[in-house]
Amino acid sequence: MRRRSRSRDLEGRRRFQGENLRKGIYVLPNLFTSASLFAGFYSIVHAVNGRFETSAWAIFVSALCDGADGRIARITHTTSRFGVEYDSLSDLVAFGVAPAILVYMWALKPFGNWGWSAAFLFVICGALRLARFNVQIDSIESVNFKGLPIPAAAGMVLTTVLLWYRLGCSGTPEHVAFPAMVFLLALLMVSNVKFVSFKDMELRKRKPFTLLLLLILLLMLVVAEPPIVLFTMAAIYVLHGPIRGLLLWGRGKEAAGSKAAEEPRTPGPSGEERQGDHFPLEQDKERDPPLLS
Image (cartoon, rainbow, N blue to C red; front, top):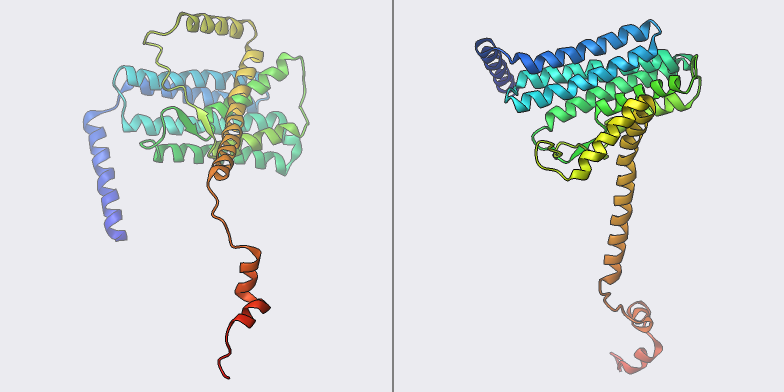
């Protein structure tokens, strides 16, 4: 059985490679994916050189490019298996390795083994999150993500760095809250907590007029105070999943309790009957005639 499965895998790979060589690849969406990968590598270089604010903005640019490549592929009908795999590899570098190195060089280095362990956990949980998403891509919901998306986890890291410098702080933030935040983000990525995906939000269709006003207002706030607004948006998105999960769990528990209370209870035996089952009363002994006279 193993030989047959291996031969099938080899045949599938050969067919996949043959199709790529004959048909080629779509340039436009993969070009944006390459730009996202370049921005992620650019972020790593600046993080190593101690330019943490520039490194954070590079991850933000990578996120914009990552969001554009998928939409362009869907609009131009140029989606391909090669593009999906290339996008996952790019996301691992731009939103897994780059934020981990950034937060390690910026805040986790003074914590020694705990610091680099938190950074490595962020990377490996991001890789597991991407692998699980690729395997379950045909069966996942279009409304919710299962686990925190890796771009959102990276967004929480980069907006924290940007907010630190926006508040006028300097130096290395030697506080236990930062490794705790990285550990929490890593665990949320591989958890079963559901997060809103916004995939069904098709802006090409007609929408209420108030939605346009809200989007314009949000854009103005981002332009006026980018670090503060972006950090607030990232924090709300990261926290809304666990909070909604706890609320739904509480409602389900209450519903189960009320359902159990509404079910009719079958009357049980009385105390005398229970006692008579194991310890017959003296009255029963007198009523029964003796077997031997």
